[in-house]
Length: 216
Length: 216
Image (cartoon, chains in turn green, brown):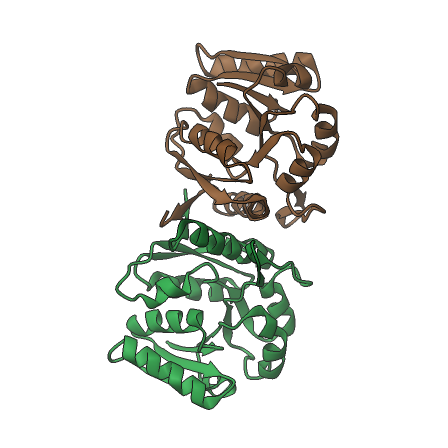
């Protein structure tokens, strides 16, 4: 599949792109600047010998993608989706955004957003796209350590079952990872908030933690 | 240890009381009515032969307890803690409350409470108690199926490290369960919200699910 990463030069986008390039997919790293997108693609090719990775500005990487992953901070979501809405029409869009901020002495703090979750806000902004959410809970550092096996469940939320199944399949191509259908758009709020819990657990216990749902 | 359950006649309180009675602790089931507290204790004794279980009204079961577990719905938290504040002075109090409501067609919906989390609100109301939170994510049904091993992590939040360690120790006495220090009071919000995610996963996948944190 052709996967595009909007805001793909951040650690989460690069980590996911490396893992999916390793699994044999074509990845395209998008950025606001063409140059930085190309630099991101170079980092993927360095990490994954033989990777099919190219870079460019966000609109150009989105154009021929089968699946578009949104891997930018929440603060940029509204403006970025506004500018890309028509380019994303008809496409499967996977929102990796978790709204949070860092507070001195507390750590990561999940932000309650007006639309309930970043996913629901993205769905409202992209009515012609097939928007789901996933991968928010995966540690960017762990993703980039390609020799390091990841043991984690990826909770996939959204209304479009077919789109969710495609993302569940993609998640399962990362060694040790399982994708789970976690329900409708309103569930994404809990998954997004879990990111803050995990970041703070990692800091407290000096580790990289992830979540498994037992009994599924 | 002597464990008291305030609002212990609900399924979560009874399930925890059964598990801890099975582990050899003395349990006291509290209710607003003495009679219903006694009925709850009888259910524990029926489920766990030889259990040291007694029942009574909430103030009477709290009086000589080493650890008090709060196992009532969020809607009752403020009034119940107001009435018990002096009886709980100096005691270790473990809040099991997860603020949520059920909405038609959606399932469990986590409620954002004024004090950020049920734990932080309880801490504010009980300044002379040693308040932590835990066990919100455990399925009441699964707890009551005593022959059924539970594979789960219990995330313990609070400021009082000694109190947290006592609760982590208690959690570890339930076969298959591990207690984890999940950080300060503000972390409890994420753990409380996780309850709604799990309830909805259970309904969707017709199972009893629980959470494991991998990498700790």
